[in-house]
Length: 175
Image 1 (tube, rainbow, N blue to C red):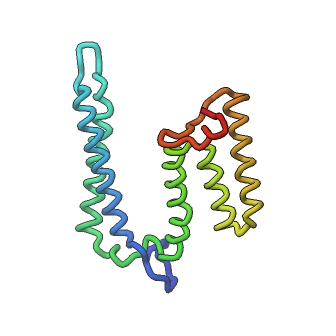
Image 2: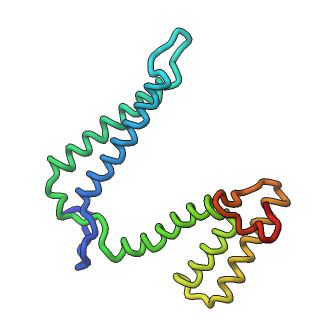
Image 3: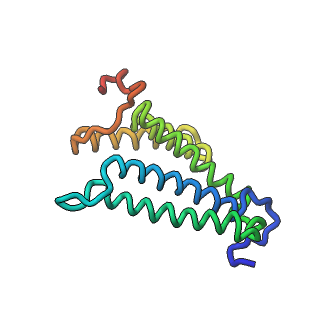
């Protein structure tokens, strides 16, 4: 048994073998994408030195080779890892409880801006995971967003994203 094997009675969400296969396929796709892009830029040695895609081509080649070896080992050689748990269901739920809202927050920054998204994100986390009263969550989240706005927009004069789809701050005169 591996030192990473979980001896608990929890149900496994995914095996080590499945994660190895998924990860190697993702890196194969990344390697192929970089390789195609570097070939479009030129991946050879020009008269004045390496072309723009020379180094990315060889880095992507290394990624492709190592991903292929990992995929071969996971899919064919190490079939015993099929039963070894990568993560159990309960810890995975806890990870997803933080990861999925963070992804929604990043999308929200693009669509409705960082200030409103931050206020919503902080308030939801304070109420949902922190079990704070709604009035405290609203006070803290609005306070943090206003502080960020004042700090970046006025003092540093660095505009942060206001939202490409809808800018709720336009109602108070912020463009």
